[in-house]
Image (cartoon, rainbow, N blue to C red; front, side, top):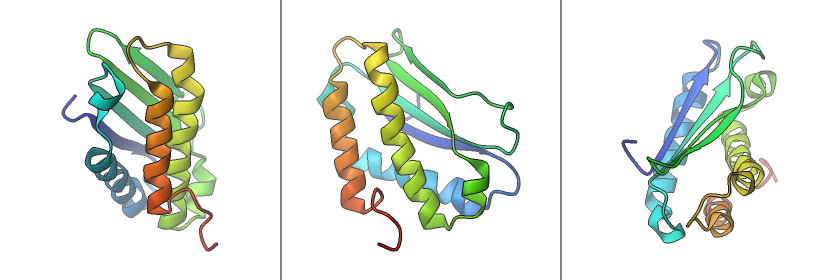
Length: 139
């Protein structure tokens, strides 16, 4: 993996570029600046791909851990029609919430040795909260 945190998207052509690109760049840069993976154990990288596709069966959600590479890979869907009717800021909040929700749901199932997933998730959640990304937009 090129960096400890890689955030990307696979999106339908009607999804505005500022949603598909700007938001993933914002999340990736924040994670790289504020979260040190080595603080949580033996993980080399976390890749998170947001899928924003109109066709619901085109890409399936996935979460995997590659022990030899010590990498977590996720591919998680955001609701296309919700993204389409939302502002860029609202989509950023959806993406931050989906990141936390995904990690809380999947990491306990993977039982990754030498990785303090609870502290990792809490710290990422704290970083997103300090940015205001987990608060309701317009609140």
